[in-house]
Image (tube, rainbow, N blue to C red):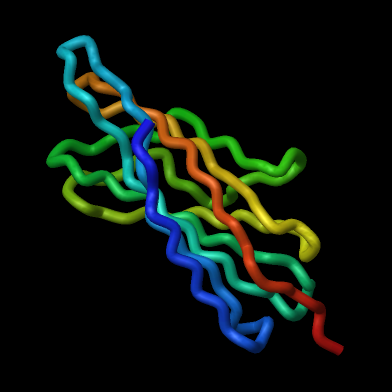
Length: 138
């Protein structure tokens, strides 16, 4: 499995605190032997109204062929990624989903499985690590 590059960004105010990451992807070979995977990035921001971390996951298809998102899972247990469309259009088109984490949680992850419309499949798992705090204001 290829390693990803973690790029944390920490600011002094909870509303501005964010953690971003670039995804390294797992290896998935199609029947033709071709390896493909979507690219995933995540950005966590503090929702000061609820005291929750909001992770905005970005899923990108780097290939010239559209892909169907077959399934998405999230960690920690009991959390979900919402608003992910069923298809990722071709050629660097980005789709997003929202993942809410309780304020005390310091990490989360997403697993995405896609099937390209010409046959190959790919799965990516990637975590996000939060190196700050999120408090409810007022």
